[in-house]
Structures are given as structure tokens and as C-alpha cells.
Length: 284
Image (cartoon, rainbow, N blue to C red; front, side):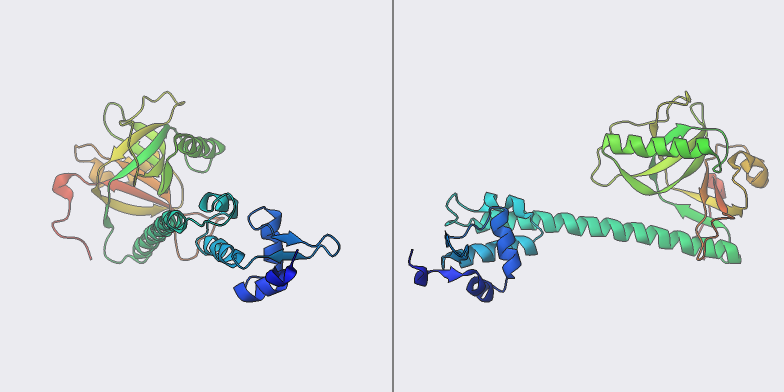
């Protein structure tokens, strides 16, 4: 073998800017086998055309394409590189990454909005009436508070069902009292409905076993904070609202604050307002 027409691994490293250890790793996983290995010294040598293969591998690295997939973008003899296919895969991965980052930003915005609302309640600023958007929830019948083992077992069941069905969790979870004949007391878990086909709809029968789906429409709610989890006490805590006839939804979640004391959690109760009780203009 005329090694004068080949590149040593050190020279290839200098020409491509890729560390020698990386070039050796590419050989180990089978995507950059050397053109020639000296039988006595075991030194690796590469052809000039393999510079382009290294560049294509680096493009995969930059685009977060797993290197085990690299063989999908080259011919069997590593002489053809399918750049259009490689770039299309990179675009697909980058788009998915952007979507994931946006979902995280949306989540952080929801937490920030709840924190600001909670701070207003704590300080008594701007009243206690806030509007909540429509939400789709997984629900499971449950009687009791949020400080029991049964509550966390039920919540774990909802998360397991969510994963089983391929759904993504939303932000909120807690307890909910739903009105109507099929209503009752439930543990709930918000579902992220973006890019999701709702296949089931409506409240489940309260048999205590099977999770179901329910959509809560957007509405105005009266808010208050309590030191204990006791959603069943909502009619007494919102006595002025429950004194009027009409169906109401009550939601209870663990409140979020600037500094959370996990030994003494604060809970937030939200009671829906009837159409005639809703503000004519948004509260400040």
C-alpha cells in the first residue's frame, strides 16, 4: 500500500478539526472505517475523499442526528453522501426540538401566571375574581383531601393512564367537584390537548376504578386560599355563592407562592361564577 497517497489519522484530524479520539470512535461504531491499517504499527490511514465523510458525520452531530443512523445517509461504499436526505432529517429533528422548547416555555408561563395570581390573593390586591381557560382533564372518583395516601395513589393512576394512552400532561392537577347528574368529587389531571385527538369525552360514572375525560369550559372563578385541603367544605367557604341556585364547578389545587413551605402547604379553592355573577369588565 502506497501510504503517501493516504492521510494519517493525525493529519485527518487537523484537516477536519475533529479530535483523533472521535475519529477512532467513528471507526469503532462502523461509520468511518480507515482505508488502510498498517499491520505492524496498527496506524490508521484514510483517503482524501473521507474528509467529506467526516464533514457529513459532523453535520449529523450538529443536527443531533444519532450517529447510529449515519449509514442511512451514505452509499454502501461511503462514496455517496445523500445530503438532501440528511438535511431533511435534521430539519425534522430541529422542528421537534423547537416544539419541545415552546411547550416548556408555555409551561413556565402558566406557572408564572399562577404565581402572580397567588401573590395578588395573598396581598389582597385586585380582588379574588379570575378567569380560567377551558381545560380537558383526566378524572377519577375520589372522596377526601389531598393529604392522604389514597389521593396520591389516585393521582399516580391518572399519570399511568395518561402515559398508557399516549397523552401529555398539562400543568394543573388536584381535586374537582363537578355539577350535574354525572358529577361528583374527583381527582383531576390536566391534559395538553395540542396535537391531540380527543377520542373520549364526558364524565365517567363514579365507580372509583376507571379514569375518564371531561372538558371544563372557560369561566370566571372566585378564588380563596385555605390552610387545609377540604374541597367538600366549599359550600360553606363560598356560602354567598352557593346561597344562589345554579350549578357550580369547584377546583382545589396546591397553591404556589414565591417561597413554598412544604411543611405547611396552602391550598387554593376556585368556585365558578354563574353568568349573571361574572364581571362586566376584567378585574385589575
